[in-house]
Image 1: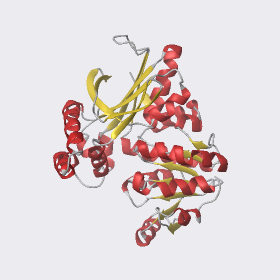
Image 2: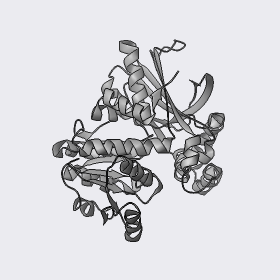
Image 3: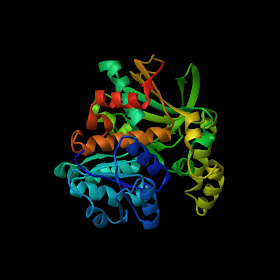
Image 4: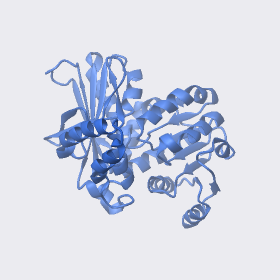
Amino acid sequence: MNSRILLLGATGYTGGLVLDALLRRGVRPTLAGRNAAALTALASRNGGLDHVVVDATNSGDLRRHLGRGDVLVTTVGPFERLGHAVAEAAAETGAHYIDSTGEVGFVRTVRDRYGRRARETGAVMLPAFGYDYVPGILAGTLAARQAGDAVRTLDIGYFATGPLWRGISHGTRTTMRDGLTLPSPTWHEHRPAEERTASRVREFAVQGRRKSAFLVSGTEVLFLPDDFPALTDITVYNGWFPALSRPLSLISAAVNTLVRLPGGRPLTDLLTLPLTFGPPGGPDTTERARTRSYVVAVASTGTPGASPLAEVHLEGPSAYSLTGELMAWAAERLASGAGGAAGVVGPVEAFGLDVLRDACGAMGLVPVG
């Protein structure tokens, strides 16, 4: 490995999973963050890792620790509030970049704001390179390729197996609640569009059963149209809690009305508060082993009532375990000079379909059904 990996956010839950995955690969990153005491303790517990104190909101501070070809990995969110300076630092220095965001609006801004500069400096920038949203892009790519020239629409659903409510982190629950009042990007009639989150509910076949999922955001709508120009529509759905899909659609309609009224925000927060109930932090190793991720991509002609042209099902480890492994794998490859085209790119463009599929398979994300 020829370049340094700088891990920002290693003292947090997701950052800790990335660190563990890197160490299992024999990679010793430099830890970075604001809390000197926490960094020192974490570095000491892991055999004396290098560590630097930096302010994630200060691009100049970050640039002092980065060189061209280094890899900057960040799990510090919410990214819309804390992530822009980090992305800017990578693009300006030519350092490769990987983040764990699920905020599609942030990814869109990163691509629009820093994509050109990243191409100039040689930075490969991979936003949302975890469970959000690598499995859906992989499944969608495989389904679209199987469908061939007739494909016009892709519907992608994210599901999970096992007792999920204790298997998701407090941060994820909060993000899900906040996302109900944010629009979800879609790809509609060959152009970007936005719809109310949970405005639509769709059923998918999952392990021999029909399960409901509600409309959400996903970077599939940003990256897949470039690979498949014939696609007219791409929509992403979340089916973690199938029985709640239709009630959440009604709640979404209510809170999006309330939030626009004077004094409606406090009432909206109260109405959606139950969605955040659960244990603090994130699931431990035992809990993660009890839940598995499941993604479905359905490719079709877009004609109502027509049978799908292709359907791909992928099953793998817990969303959190998979995120840690994906980010660590990508960081190791980029540090060794094995990345693809510079710029803000999706996972297939960065590494190629065969390499990505094989790597995901090695992590346990494999086709089923």
